[in-house]
Image (tube, rainbow, N blue to C red; front, side, top):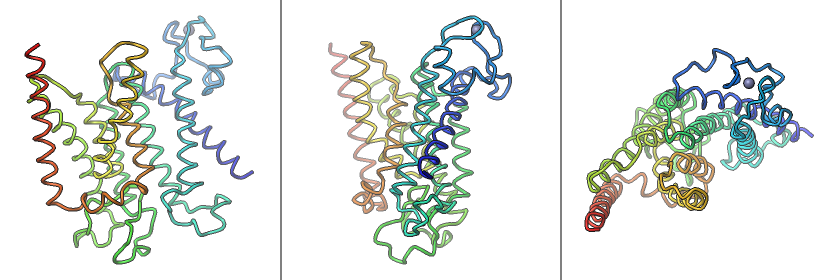
Length: 347
Ligand SMILES: [Zn+2]
């Protein structure tokens, strides 16, 4: 009973947030205010009453039309509301009900009655917030091949502020970490920026740890994609990667830290391939937005981090290996893109 009530509440919250995200998707690319004026029909400009603005339901009741002028609205609106609601429920299920990150309170029998610690809920809300930002970026990218800078900059700023308040290993308490941990505890920010932490960060759990983790994450996110875009463009001799994607990863890095951004970038190949095949099948259009694949990969990697990160730990915290991997990958990328240019040039 309690569980069902919680899930319904999370679903309704998600649907309402999704409704607001629709406003963001419609207005951000035009640099309009998100709060004023209230929602209105894009055709007859009549304000939409509150009872016609209920997420999901109103769309179904009015069969996707304006009450005044019967203008047809895109089904995308309802899809965003539904996807956000389901995304929130899924996230809640995985992070709170299943407690996949083994956040504190799990041993407590009351946890199952949803008297879990407020800290765990904050961790979930943190990831739900990132999900909402990524959702807007995805829909904007799908609609106009553009991710508004206003969105990603706001997201990065929010990410940095939150990072200062929820420093790794939050929601774990610092005292729970043994001096030589077998597994690094997963925080809302997945990992700290370095292991072992420098002396001025003590054991983590303080403002400087959280802030530096967020700043390094944002820098690595944007520099990784800009760097790859730069090398690729240099080899290929033309622009290759959108800057919006770099900004998106900057935002994700500010929320989750740099290791996750790097891994999520490499894993995004899989959803990108899948979306590419789908798009080729239905549209025969080869200009592929990368934002949706990146967003999906960021959320997926965040949830799977406990399962996939252990073998990566040795190498992600070793400056010697990191340096040579960057040099090697950079060189390979340049050679590959240069070869592509030669092949294209000879055609
Ligand atoms: Zn209308």
